[in-house]
Image (cartoon, rainbow, N blue to C red; front, side):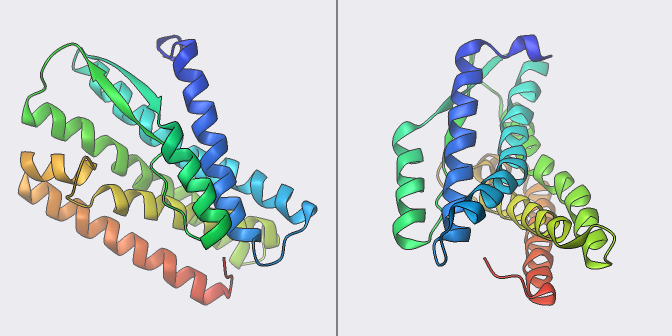
Length: 209
């Protein structure tokens, strides 16, 4: 499977992974910056944000390849710079690091919908292990670090899933809606519900980012 990711794509994935992890780290530490805190939260972001982003894009890629198309992730350097600058100056993350580009032929609505659904569905699935890590930290089994990793991973993947389900522009939600309205409604409500749970978890633990 990994042999289907060419060197150019690995490079784009790595750059985008580092950039969005940096953007989220700047959100976490901007009000009280110190190098130790920066390194801790950057490591956490690499695991939580990075895994959510990479697996989201790889889900699109390998679903497209199952339909017989060639697909590669392409970073958007300008949008990555905007994400980092906005995080540093305004405390806002607007992460549109790039997109998985599908080559070869025209997609049917069904194919496009199924390829699109793979991304947010992957992020919803990732909420499960991060949610379990969060519950472990909440009960004292993993401690504060586990609590933070679980909370951030749960919330970030919920945010990625919900954001991509918005039926606008080139986002996944628009393609899913044009393919199958009931599927769109179910998945949209699911991502909204999980996002609400993730925000509630922040309130319960008292963690503020």
